[in-house]
Picture (cartoon, each protein chain N blue to C red):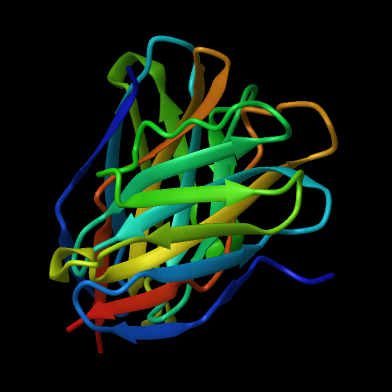
Length: 118
Length: 115
């Protein structure tokens, strides 16, 4: 079966432009996460979706960042008015097959989108 | 609040030598602990996980980790390093807070294997 798919794999944009990053989770996975990984640093939590519950947006760094997910399918992360400090790899992960929340389910990651803001 | 500390952002070992990557966690509830590996230009892959039961957990590629509650540690080991083990390794703790699952990652340890 297909894994987590992210697109585009690379994105170069000019400062001030908006960008939209896409994540296709594994079919049936109810939980979806977005993380940011700056060069040489660890994973920074951005946002978490679980089924139809309200998302946990506590990691979004500013109001320029937003994310949506329709049901248990595709998610998009939008960054408005990009800044150079937004340059990073944005990783998406999904987990928890089925309807039960399983706190010990591992995350399945996509290969990420490398965003470069010039 | 839960947290993960990985000691050493870079570790170098000779090929064939023991690999030891350290991870300490903090969690207010019994933790679920994970090790992930990230190869260049790829996402993270699960190496192994601890949920309940046996405290010595075996994973893929010959790696294993031992959960020590008294030390709040979950160190990753491999008896003999291979060149293909060169990658970045992340320790993570999963729990729940306010009805949400929280997965917190450490800052990662880059493993270099010297021929």
